[in-house]
Image (cartoon, protein in one colour):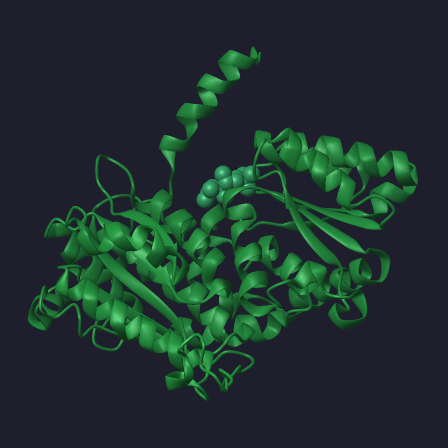
Length: 435
Ligand code: PA5
């Protein structure tokens, strides 16, 4: 059953349905190529059947390791950057308590989780070292290539802190490495030191790796049911095995964004109305940006958090350069309901909505915004997510992965490489005097 839905009423005035369905032959051709593994960089198509191919043994190994971490650590640190951290971060924020790390351990029942190696900030790492003082720690260092500078620096520093605290032997039991099965500096180190390891499959690129051990181990440590997550993704894999745009939500969304891009809408703003979607937006930006932005082409993916950003970016979206379209994301049902209380003297003038739920008001805020933006010539569509369960999350991950791959191929770029990322590295290494 799909737990996500796409509403396109505010797209139709800008893009008639017929135009979308006319794209079917191109979509079908790309679908066939992907299914046969014949598109550009088809050795990176492993994510396509990841949900249905993940073995019970792997799920068990991940859950066993997560249990070990929960029993031995107050704090779990995930070291990684880009695709090696965004999926886990997005999942934990989507499913778990908004203030997860601050909850009492007796309520949370799982370790505090922090991320490192996603920047080179001295203060960030120093502050993290403060947080973990006097707490038992386990570390998951994640790098597919095993050679990325940011996580390597963070790992060197945190490994050192761990060895000083526990001694080398105990420290090595508290480190788990997720990396390539045979190549890279991290793999070499993991073998030398005897760390527990998980493999990032060869045929799954970083930004498509949320449903591999890259994402699954931290997600399991956070107490989220990874079997349910994979079930959601698997059901969506099945739904989207059909090339028909009318039945395949991922391709429907991909076709719309591609056609809007062709009409000069070169920026897509992902606007969510729930803070738990913030990192889904960050994850999506990496997925879309790195997959499509190449050869002088690609939609620029931006994200905003409403209603917060209606008081900042809302102005630009309503009234700025008309080169954007918008994809709203709403969660149909919050985990918990709060009603607006009645006040005797109505000093703040809110009694007209007394007794209404915050979800109700948030939904009206969405409706008002969507209409205003349509009137301001911003084509917009709505992704509705049923709830904040791991099952729904699995569907969101898979929905976007399949859509962005299709979208990249429609643009005639290779959605699975990222040659542009090497340029800053080259300059940085020269400046650092790397031999
Ligand atoms: O999508 C990608 O491939 C990248 O964004 C990587 O995830 C990111 O650069 C981290 O790479 P690695 O896991 O090799 O350290």
